[in-house]
Amino acid sequence: MPQLNLFLANSFLKEKFGEHLFGDTPNSPGVYRFFDKNGDIIYVGKSKNLRKRLFYYRGIRAGSCSRKEARLLSEISSWEITCFETEKEAILEENRLIRKHRPVYNHANKMVETYYFIHLRVYPSKLVFCLSMNENGRFRQKNRSHGFFQSGANKKHPEKPTDEFCFGCFKGHLTVRKSFGALLQLLWMRFAYANSVYSLPKCLTRNLAPSLFTMPYKSDTLSVSDNLSELIIDWYSGQSDSLLCHFDELSNRSKHSFTKIFIQDRIEILKSFYQKTLVKHRQMRDRFCETDSKIINQDEVDDFFVKLHF
Image (cartoon, rainbow, N blue to C red):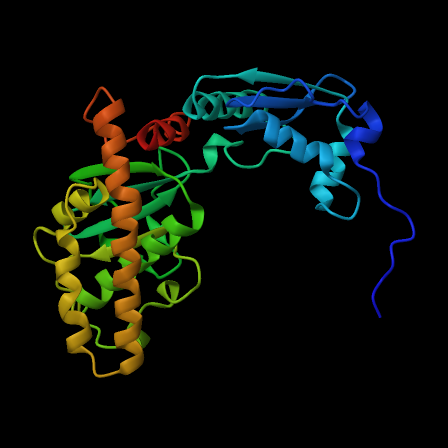
């Protein structure tokens, strides 16, 4: 039986501020800011057509919006708009205001420290990978997630790294974490000569990749190519995807259909990550960074991303 609306719901903002609300708003790109009764910014938005966007808010009625929108509209006490010549300028200003004021109803781009860095530490006998939200990633002596650590005989004279690299920051939690896990899985299968997905260490079979992983150069099972670290550096620098060539033989080597599908899926994840993230990151560094650093600061990456695409 269809539900009947006994009472026609009124628009939140029209009922509060009147019929002529936003009537003089221009059809131009710009940024709008909503304030609460205390004068605090509670939401910042941008649009390539301010009039159209604000008229959308003006027309929202009870029952036709999300709870978040309903709460936001109920708290709006005043607003301001700033017009720009281009949408690019509006997006950059929106990013700046969100970072500065951190409005309660904004989520994207609000906390600049939520982007990932990937660290690689090179030792004579191993590679250590670290996933961190800090440019100064923390490397522990022991990785409890899978038990690779320096032997007791070397504790007095711990092995020192020969080099250390940091890449990032990279946007997209899920994308970065999935690709990081996929790379570790394929590296292990390739250089441990594991013919089945069931041979992976337990920490590489979980939904989330470990934040720290050690791959020995020399052991009874592992055989890592001499230039592996160089391939990984070129990979995360967005300079070359030659690393993927080392995984081509994995599918042919395995006799398990599930493992073949698993490997191909991981290769596709890495191909997509390279083209959509690593290459674009290199392009942003080449165009907007004055040094040869492989790092883009967390408070710059959003603006660089906008500049690259406009």
